[in-house]
Image 1 (cartoon, rainbow, N blue to C red):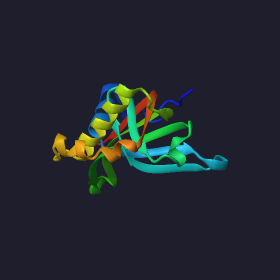
Image 2 (tube, one colour; image 1 turned 90 degrees about the vertical axis):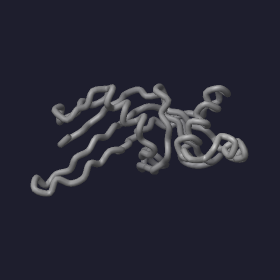
Image 3 (cartoon, rainbow, N blue to C red; image 1 turned 45 degrees about the vertical axis):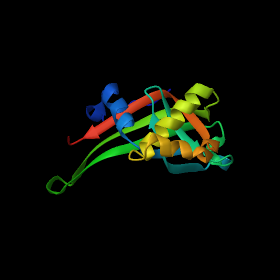
Length: 152
């Protein structure tokens, strides 16, 4: 169902792909949008070891149950000028998004996002931001994960 990587010598082991997801903070969510047109949006996310979570407003492209592609290029090591190439590691995850309605998982995802986005803010200050809890928390169960790197 999922294509094999063409440049297999650049394929990363699954544990490295998961490490990239764990250490990253933003990625690109790509959807098959209205009329079959692609829709891609950069966004913040958290990965809890099982799912990718992100938030959105009550309306918009992200809340529909599309099959999605989440691509997060989180490590750019710069240009190797004399070789006309770059250093990088990236990950692509496929899955379906849905609204997280399980109270405990939703609360955990929300707290993970708050910590990821505001690492220097105290927990007490985060608790004051209760209005943020109105955001919809979306989740993506990973059906396929692929990592790629070059010139490491």
